[in-house]
Amino acid sequence: MNTMILGLQKDKINDLALDLNELLANFQVYYQNLRGLHWNIKGKSFFELHVKFEELYTDAQEKVDLVAERILTLEGTPLHTFEDYLSLATVPVGKSISKDIDAVQLVVNSLDKLIKIERNILDKSDDANDEGTNSLMSDFIAEQEKTVWMMKAWLG
Image (tube, rainbow, N blue to C red):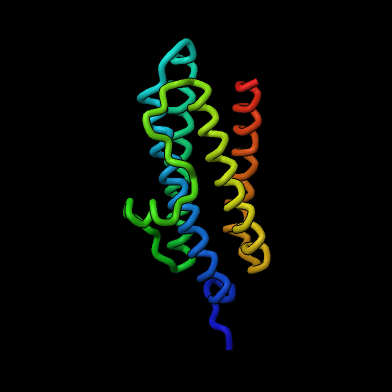
């Protein structure tokens, strides 16, 4: 007999919690990248990008919390060490980036990775009939696709 969590199959939910931890790790690296971009951006785009990166890292911080809380809701344990984050994350680490084009390209590349992970979770949450996780991923993807479009428009 298959054990249930929140009316959902435990094995599928456990698998989703693992994937959500991978997403959490990637969001934490993305968040820290955005903090670095906010602090270190230079040049003629400073004022607009300084504000934009703050907006993006504030949003990322909220998403980190939502992902961790979803993991807890699914009776998992959210990762919480930089060691865990760096071992799981595939989002590129942006170190000492101060040029506007490089900074915006890092955001686009990072969001591409996050969206790929989220689409995988979306498929699995659909299969598990997990509407809570499914809805969360759907919202994240819609917002991030718009951000990618805007960042690519800025890049020209």
